[in-house]
Picture (cartoon, rainbow, N blue to C red):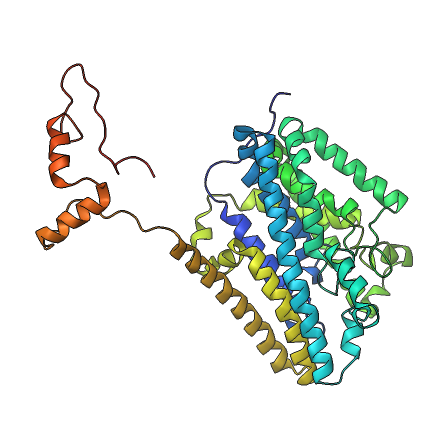
Length: 432
């Protein structure tokens, strides 16, 4: 089939890093209950929240990274690279899973507080540890706040054939994703959890956000530019955001909620997060439209130092996410010990975000150290001794001065080759 997708342009899209970093910070704050600081996150002012943003950007990034590879090197190579990423996500989840439950168990024993075990859904480890751990490896058993990574793993694991088809029929895949979404909601499809219940993030429904991200990355937003830039779309987006704000506040404040008809209030409260309610998806789609319209990829503001911590956290998203989930438990317990004072809430929130940011900066620095140093310039600085200059030249080119002189005399890089011969570049001058 002919390729119909529009591949993303070259260069890193800092918008993805910025909003992914923002999602990591918001997830950390939202995972700490009774924390006044999490009132700054988007979940309090509309139907969607940081989880929607995380899944959407995951789909966008997966297409951004692997689409060109799949076209140039074939389905097998692209699919195996995606599978490699799935394995990395799975390993990260298992490591976080073990550390998380050990920390919960230790705190429960150390402070004689068994209620923590029930609160974080790890009581099964006490009654049936072997089976519970086995189900954890199968992604069926998940302590509280460890639901996002298993969803991400499943969506990425099934993505290779979806990406192959989306490169050829992007709109058809998007329509199929909507069909699966509505079918799953109608027939109540979901995956089973252990020991009971279903997945908190229903993958049959949340795949819509993931595929929507991929569709936008592969030309969907470009083909929809006329609609996105229209005046009517702008007014619709503003109107819907105001409506979502009002309905969300109605759910937050009972007195305010009583002002609305019961049928209207019940339609949006409680917010159906498990099955990704249609009004929730629409709210997030509206936000995407506004970002595309008002924040272009080349916006100079993205290079402002004020956004650098968020961008760094977005670039090291997996590690920062795992650290944030663990720190959210630590922060929750710290607030329990301090009786949840306002000062303690602010300190816990700021400290956690600072630690996540430090982790992101450290990993960025560490990755740079793993890269080989650039070859030294052959030409010495004016104040550089001749011996050092010669040594640097040898290190850079791998050719002794005499050999290089011979090469130049034969028509190497220092001058044109004699008639009838080919010029052969000296070693070390090719592209890395």
